[in-house]
Structures are given as structure tokens and as C-alpha cells.
Length: 452
Ligand SMILES: *Cc1c(COP(=O)(O)O)cnc(C)c1O
Image 1: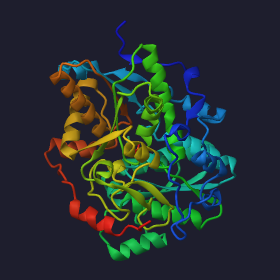
Image 2 (image 1 turned 45 degrees about the horizontal axis):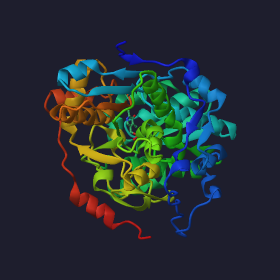
Image 3 (image 1 turned 90 degrees about the horizontal axis):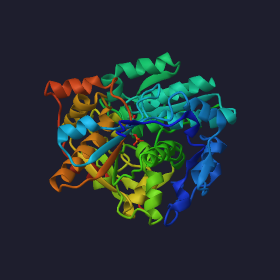
Image 4 (image 1 turned 90 degrees about the vertical axis):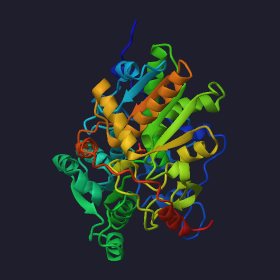
């Protein structure tokens, strides 16, 4: 049988999420309270998160049941298909097999509702009436607007200013699902006012928008904060991707040699790869290559330092041990807005530090070239973030061809790019800028880090 698309039944949607904390070679360094520099406890998080999510954040249980209500909603688009990219293989004349797990089938068009729906569920359970969040390219904002609509929760979104301007249709989508949305920095929060005073023309950043949302949640009783990436519970929810993928590969009697995915805060790739990284930790697949892909304009894993830093730009969040470029680093306004984050998920960082995972970084133009090849061969127009994973998959397929190796490559195809066509437009009209690694800016941001 020649398979092109490997699908699962609705009843094969995972019943449990996989928690890699149970299998780490050594425990994560705990998040620290910035004032005391002591590990924070659950009570420190309860001002902005519901108990259900706090428990997941620190859980050491290997598998955590997915509530029936959440699985019912997942059925709208899950299980998502695993495709074999035969036309791309032909185009590259590669000896490798290329697969991709397509998360663009969800209503908001990315992997993000896998966590948004779960987060809305646990907040509803805790009696929360309003959720606030930040969004970069608008993918997370639209996912949370969609999820809160399903659970009848109010929603406010702070959207990074340069993306708000580049991507007006994401704003409209968010408003369609009934949420409020503002370009960040705003004058609605102290954090926003402070940034505007210092730099009135700022393009905004994810870190700044997080500061605004956290402040909003901390100052309203009925309101919680919701984060679309980075935290352990978000990576946990996304493991439905990798758990399904494993079943799909079993169905065709294959196992990947190389898994790649783009990393902004690390959630889609953590979700896709952790169930496979487990096999590597267990010694069953020692040669498995697990590769994160990031922009050279924001090279967190490839150029950052592994140390404690704030999750946001102002310094409101606990300190997290992760690869970081410095919390007040503002990356150039690349089209992949969702990859403009100074840090990455502590779980993914730890596994990178311990060499279970590795990372590469690319220029903006080369990833759009790859995404255009992908559109011409496979048809799907991927998000600028996802384009990074496409470029890496193509690179590995070319390497396999050069060495005449039969590698099986799979990439996490995290979402579609139908709201990101302005980036493709800039690419086609030769107006795209290749930002080089902003070494000076990063040095400056790193110099301001707290020493632990
Ligand atoms: C947000 C987003 C990303 C980056 O976020 P991660 O948490 O690293 O997954 C990647 N791809 C798409 C399509 C996104 O919307």
C-alpha cells in the first residue's frame, strides 16, 4: 500500500496527555520568586492561574487524563492527519521520506487550540469569568478567543503592535469570536505606559505584551491570565500531537530518524517530539535526531545562554531557567511573529542542554523560499513560523540525498499561513529583509539579567 495521508479514528484521540517531567534525567530547576530568589509555590501562581493548571505545571505523573469535555471539542479537528510529502520528495529528488503532521485543520488554523481549549476548561471549572492574554502573530489570540467562546468566558487580548499592523485579519477573526483586542504596548496598563514613555515608537514584543496581560490579570479578581506557550502545562496539552503521530507511524510500520519543528516558545514542537524523546531517554532510540528551528533574528537556543530570566519584558513573572537572549531584547519585526520571544520552554531548554535535542537557525528569506517550494509541491500555504520547520526538513532531505541515505524525516506542520500572505507578498516582490544576528542588541539585553 502506498500511503499519502495517515488518518486515525475519532476514538483514537489520546485519552491522556504525556508529561515528560516524569521521565527527565534530572528534575527541572524550579521557577524562582524574583524578590526572594527562592522557589515559588503553588500559592504564588494562584493569583493568575486556576488550580487545575497549577497542578499540571508541577505534576510528576507520566500520564494525565484529558477531560471528556476537552476531548469532545478536540473532535472538531482531531485526530489531525499525518501526510507523506511525496511531491516535495520528488521535487528534491531525495532518497529521504518526508512526513508532516498537519495542525492547520483546527478552526483557528494552528496547534494552539490544543492548549487553549484545555486552559479555558480549567478556568471555567475554577469559576473564572474573564481571561486575558498576549498574542504575537495573532495565532494564540485567535485560539483563546475561539476557546473562551466555547466556554462562555470573556476574553481580552494584547497583540504585539507590529503584528497588529501587519496582520489586520487576525484581529477581525478574534473579534468574530467575541474577544476584545488592543495593540500592545497600550496605555491601559502601567507596564504599557512605562514602555511607551521610554520608547514611543516601539514595535512591541511578546515580552511586553505578556507584562500587560499579567498585570491586567493580577489586578482583577474575576480574571486569570492565559499563556499560549513556554509553561509546562502548555507543552503537556500539545502532546496530543506527538501521541497521535506515534500511532500514525505505527500504523505504517515506520519510526522517524529525524523530527523537526519550529520553536517560538516551544509548545508545538514539545508536543510533537516529547513522546518520541521519551524513547530516546529510555534508550530505545539513541540515534533519533530531534531538531528545533528558530529565526536568526531571535536565536534563543543557538545563541542564548542557559540561565534564569523573566518570562516577560518588565520582570513581573517568576524567573525561569531557560535559554534566553535577555528579557528586554526586542527582536526585529520578522514576519514569523510567533517566533519573536526571548526565551523558550524550560522543558525544551533542559532537554536541549542535556543534548537530547539540538537546534538550528535560519534567515527569513530562506524560510520563505522553502515555504514557497512547499506550496508549489504540496499545496498547503504554511505560517511563516512553520516555514522554519519546512526549511529544516528540506535541508535534511538534501543532506540525505547527498549521502544517498534513506532517512525518514517528519516535521511538525504547526499551522496555515492564510492570514500571513503579506509576508509572502513581500517575499515575491523582493521586499523581504534578511535580518542578521543582532549581536550588539542581545549583548545589551543580556547585561541587564539578574545574577542568581
Ligand atoms: C505560535 C506559533 C508557533 C510558535 O509557538 P510555539 O509555542 O513554539 O509552538 C509556531 N507555529 C505556529 C503556526 C504558531 O501559531
